[in-house]
Length: 256
Image 1: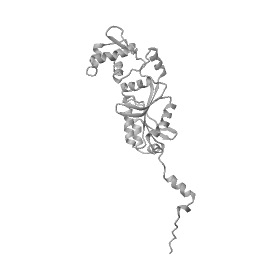
Image 2: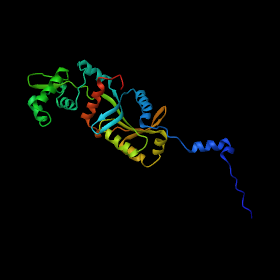
Image 3: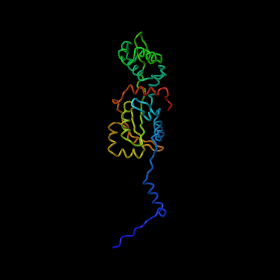
Image 4: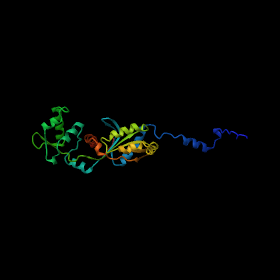
């Protein structure tokens, strides 16, 4: 029995269909850098009527993109109190939230506030922060030594969306997105679309579902949620959340 002759095909003689197969088998990466994913994700956040900030500093690191939408009714209520300034620092937010709202018909004394913030703020620092809150109309003094807040508008937001951009290292992105649940009502990992669509077909997607972390599939000109983020209020630090929203207050309606 004779063996079939070996046919050697030089590439110069190969039909064009061979080159098409070769090109299809070697897929180019969709993005070279995580930064290249920013524009389509930013556009998606804006389409969702969110004010957006890039590289948002948090106690545990930097979140690539954060979007906030304000509750317009509450924002208008705040403006009726002539509260045009941001509350400001985390400790000032904490102080404001310790003071009973005027609608509660309760008040807190300076002595009680000193006790609450003992070891955190010196008496001078406490009074400095109080004077700022009074000057900016966040706090009123119904009688000497007593304080009430004017923050019946809280919480000020409808949505806070945090997005971590990653080309790979999915577990690292997942851990970051879980941390972001402390302040965000929705937390996402944005991945190149091919990576994202492969991921949701694997068992690892169950970790995302159980944690409420969503997945965005990002293309050169597209960004689609292939796994939605779910809201879990019990996981959230309300003071951190309030401070994050305050950072958007002065720039609401614009983006950075």
